[in-house]
Length: 237
Ligand SMILES: [Fe+2]
Ligand SMILES: [Fe+2]
Image (cartoon, rainbow, N blue to C red; front, side, top):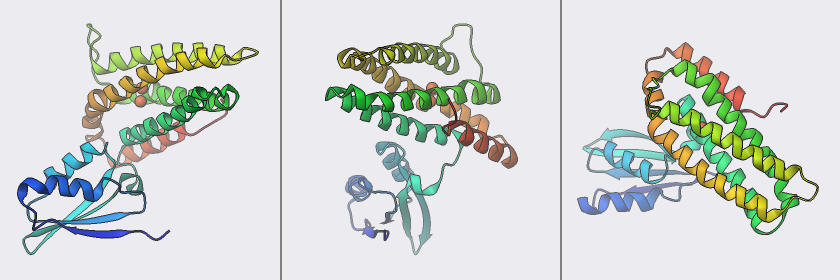
């Protein structure tokens, strides 16, 4: 596939329009695409805000020349993960996609088609939680408080709840004739739990872990990247 490269010159836009014009230029960016934005103002804040609006899907490099900034924007997935937290964030999206596919089949009353997807999803989610609990929590060792309302304690508690919900779904699937409505109801509850859980991790816990990551040496970081990548990969569960 040939990469599509488009240049959007925003230097003539009035300052109040630059943000929305830039948003429309990059909002449909797909893997392999590149958009070059040209701005009159230093674009760091603009790019951070666009990236936030687009769920951290952007990667960019910028250069200044002749009083203008040239920003080359690509899809984050083309850039490679910058740290172990981004590996987990990407895994959240992968888990969400897999679960959505299973839910769509359940909505169409296709329990037999949904079952293998749900099993794959449950195995991947357990691997993901094991990485967070057993690999990263001890390494990053952010403080837990006696009140239990710190991000790490909340994560550990929510994982226990998610494991229980997965066990209930597995029990329904193990029956002779899995009942689509019943499984669908439990899956809907889990979908809500998981969305809130991922949001809390990405916004409350991972920023704290990132601060610890920033103080690690390059050798420690690449060792951790390799360990997390391997632990997220399907094994022989
Ligand atoms: Fe988690
Ligand atoms: Fe997670």
